Picture: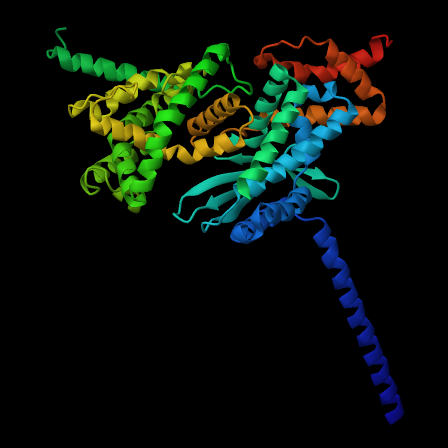
Length: 215
Length: 312
């Protein structure tokens, strides 16, 4: 009887161990699966957290340091090639593939440089995600507020687009002013009046202005 | 007039009736859909005034405002802003009622009374403590709510961005500004103002815009277009009381267009080359206002071209 009892115990303990190991493995499998397809609001949160972190260390990092930290953050959360294409509207198709690539590259540098230059200090600001609203054609609006230290709030709304498994920011609307619409008006007007190379030169000049003005 | 012994009272009644009727009728109209592209037929003139304003600002206003911000403590500046806001608040109240927002109108009236009394002539925003929030209304917004289109974009000398629809408010806000009735002449042009209070009002206004203007100078590739678009979008934001109907609606359409183009690219490797060819044929000197329309129709014509036009 005793031996039999022992065998049952051994069997039970082995089974329990296996179940336990299986559960852990299943749990591990589940976590990355969730991590790989973040919600749109998570993408925005991730970016805003990086922004605040960089703002807090702004002086220590300097312009170069901020640029490096923000470059990966912007690339991870924004769909820069898409935005670049939208903001020059119909002129996109008038450019050669080489010019298109050059424009996207320059626009990316300018976008990161703008962040690195603008977010150069911390004054107790906080971001808060308010809502996430689905829009037609696989777009999502994430509404957030920037709460300033004096208690005043500003609307920061992000428009995201599905890119494969994840979501990417394609527009930021601050107190009703859409970054995409603003840039689009500026860029198309510049190309129309002065041509593509003049636009590119202006963008380059802007980037070096940020670089020189901040160090 | 036998049934109406007191003529003036009768007239008042009729006038009120017409007013209420007007509000009810136009209240149904609602603001027209905001235009995605600016209507800017006077761009050349506007651009000259923009350059002029920027120069005046750089030479006169910026140094004054810099000194003002340096020398006057933030709390004092806040009180000065509150004071001028309160003086011009009757304009907000009148326009809130004209837009048919009666509840908000009574709240705004309460706000004005509280700030004028408890807030010591408006120096302190006491009403906000009681939860009576500040609103931003003017006659330009009222006209929009009544269904009037924004009209051509304007840059006014000394005063900056405006539209045809926002012009009448210049007179309206002067009429409803308490300033006008306490013996201080408010000159709309601002620069010619002789009263120290009016000068202070102008400095206060410019100081409040200082951060936004600095941001513009840092961000803009084309200062004129940046100012115009930011102004127009912010006006839409105010007209809809902070909830405009998706300012990126037009971008949304674009997104679809570009997605279509991407798909076409994927289907036909030569598509982009052919599209380029087609776009080269488009006239390059269309006014900005038609650009959007061209883009909207472009994909369709590209498709047609792919099947019908003989390629070289």
